Length: 145
Image (cartoon, rainbow, N blue to C red; front, side, top):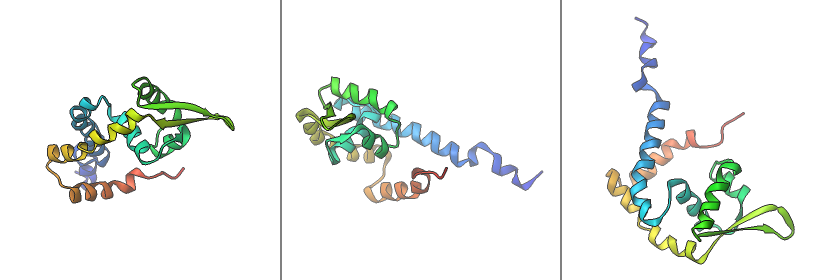
């Protein structure tokens, strides 16, 4: 038996652990976000907008590591819910700005409870969550071409 055989076991694969964890994280967030009327991807959009609004669709897509074509339907749904507005810049109609509505800004107050609920569900504190997030940084940043 080749000693490298263990390297090919599914249970030893980093990629498998990350994919499984990502899927499970989304399912952990689902019941917490449901009362807010948000899906996990919509929550990420709102988090970015609560930090800085308005911003262009392109800027938002870059920050969220998403393609604008993937982000656009999420933003449209948030607009239909009355949480954001989409408008073309008067000086450059190619740029679509996304801004929070009053309802979208107010939702932030309710969302303040989300991190605590997630920490309680997974049995981790702020320091543990930060350590895990930081350990994932090499896998989350931009990849060389």
